[in-house]
Image 1 (cartoon, protein in one colour):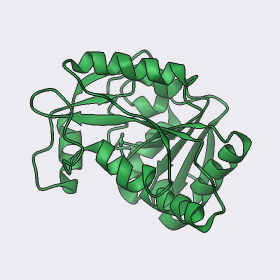
Image 2: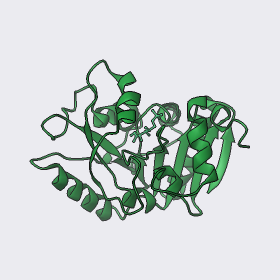
Image 3: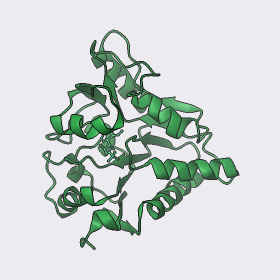
Length: 241
Ligand code: F6R
């Protein structure tokens, strides 16, 4: 695990965009697992600036959705529902970055089948080259809530009360009680990962991730290996450096 520091969220966005751009330069048909949430938004905006300036081409990249809410009928939300993470990913990533290839959760009759189909699509891509992740306040990755071990598959999950509360800020509508998430299996099999962490409110969870031990009680602590970069701003790092 490589720990890198950035002065502030904007500097972090530039460093993250540099890292992603370099990976795309080496492999233009990169498969990229894409988190939503607040943390990566400045990074995506920085990438979008480069695409619009013509200095970065992401047209051969495949963007893979990380997680999605389920509606009350246990099917996907409508794409136009303000809570839809696919909608968010479209607006913040797929559209502005001119992405043409995507893998998303496709809902039919049965959400578990949706997960099986998602895994098959990721396998057909040859797995994930780079996972761009945010850190949940409780250490979750995607919607792999604690406890989630390394074998936790792509699946339907109930959302923890903490996640329902932390996601509440995004809408005035009720936070769904269930979601689907790429499994820890998919995330940990990524050939590289980039965990983005900003803000003082992430300081204590980040410290636990960095200091170990690796435990299903803190799914992000299970990230490991030579090509995992944790990129955190000073507010999140506190005195960890
Ligand atoms: C989003 C996701 C979540 C977030 C995490 C951090 O697709 O899967 O795991 O990455 O909750 O959220 P923010 O960045 O809003 O602090």
